[in-house]
Image (cartoon, rainbow, N blue to C red; front, side, top):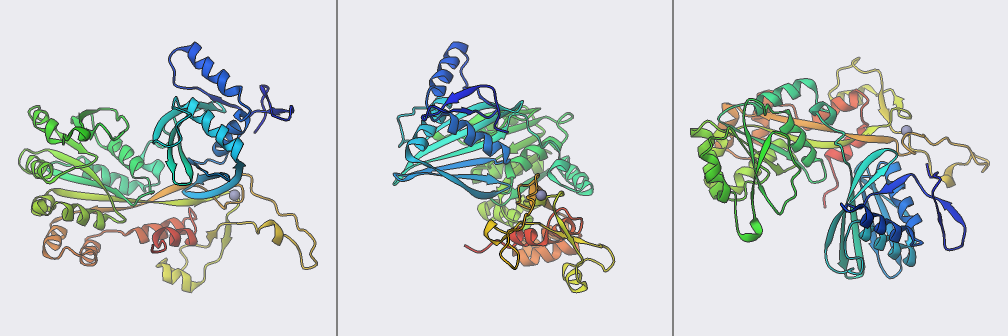
Length: 451
Ligand SMILES: [Zn+2]
């Protein structure tokens, strides 16, 4: 992967081959852009910078974290949601790498203290990517976080996210409802922004007009066929600043990445229940029931209206997919199947990841080294990519009454289950039964260690 005709000379005078990566600093003037590239290529750390970013893309990392201290620079990649330590850089190399990245992101490379944010567009193996670069001084040095995203979104449909077809249809029905409010939710780090973008895409935006009310200081991605209305919270503005004039235009659907305050919630409930509009919002929560209760607890003055308006809540968690090249089948015991609630005879095999032993353990009884082939697809991680599992709570009158009577998670869950609700646990078992993921992974995601 690290082959290319262009060459860069290292400090030792040796020529090293650069990976096939083209940085394209966001500058309109081509000559100025070229000037920045010549300056960056002229630095001896340009090679290590290119290799670090190319390796991250090669390993499918979506984030790179650099911790710069007086001793050197620790490098970590985030792959499928897990952080992996890479070999550290010495201080001189690391400092040079950070200078180059800041120049590519059009930032002040001399400033290592203030928070800085910029973008680095690039092409790697004919695919366009964008790095969102963030740096900030810390007590011991500086921290750099880079988020890497493909320029063209790869995940487009609820099916791409991993949602079953039946649930997709149910969710579309809820999103195309009237006189109601729908809620998106996921715990932190479980893909709420993608679920939000793709979920809104799944709603019918051609027969109804969608309007999104957003804070200018939060960088929400553009959505096709949704008109944006901006307010500036840094100037003390709230959605109310744009909502009243928007309502004069009789919008069908109001989209709120954040409802912001009680006044907005009260007005939105009124519009939904009395003016036949539809509202969509989102909240960070680890289950559908928790998401709904969190919304109610945040706006206690509007509980009755919110309960009346809410028609559904979706919740997502991300699981690592087993690598299909190296996953290992095993015959589950009847006890295990019973514990999982899978009827006997339904599945012949479950799967677990193949994780090769560390190099020092790759020896036989006589201490002779054994060759163990490392899977080419997953690089020995045992997993390749992630997919969502989902809960979709469809709120009917029985559930509404339960919430108003006793707003406690266990009680609501019980009533919801009596009304056909399938929990994340049950959805997860389906993912294990089909071999999409392992039991270990499901347990890791559903029962994270308490902090
Ligand atoms: Zn593999």
